[in-house]
Length: 109
Ligand code: 2BA
Image (cartoon, rainbow, N blue to C red; front, side, top):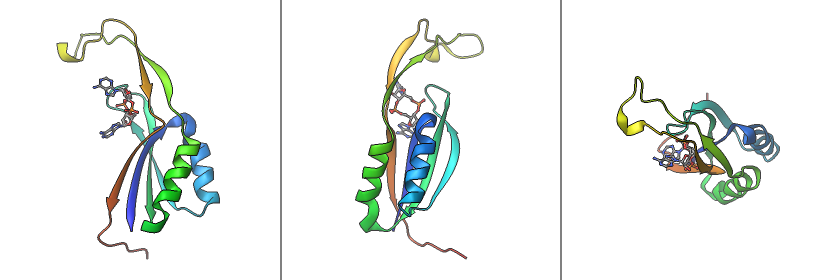
């Protein structure tokens, strides 16, 4: 068994949720915040049998797309100079960032 942790954009989270349910995957959705943009994103925790990981990857790929996003200038006030961004910058935010972890034990009461 594997635990798939998928960080996706908020705009894709409902569509992905629906696709997971429709395809019999069980998932937990967590509200999360990206460390770089400091804006909301959604983290899915999905426990899945090893044999279904490729199908799950396809589903995530089909339902999440990458987008360009502007990073607003960051004021140096209250922060340190390392994080200071003086002008807007465009970054491409990925469709999904996925970690696949081995599960030692799974219990469901
Ligand atoms: P954020 O940290 O808000 O990052 C949003 C996007 O900003 C990233 O898209 C990337 O294009 C850019 N970015 C991030 N850090 C950067 C940096 N130090 N310099 C320049 N550009 C940078 P993605 O790579 O697709 O990441 C989307 C979200 O996935 C991230 O939101 C974060 O919440 C999560 N993520 C990405 N890599 C991760 C990792 N190694 N560990 C944990 N979470 C990760």
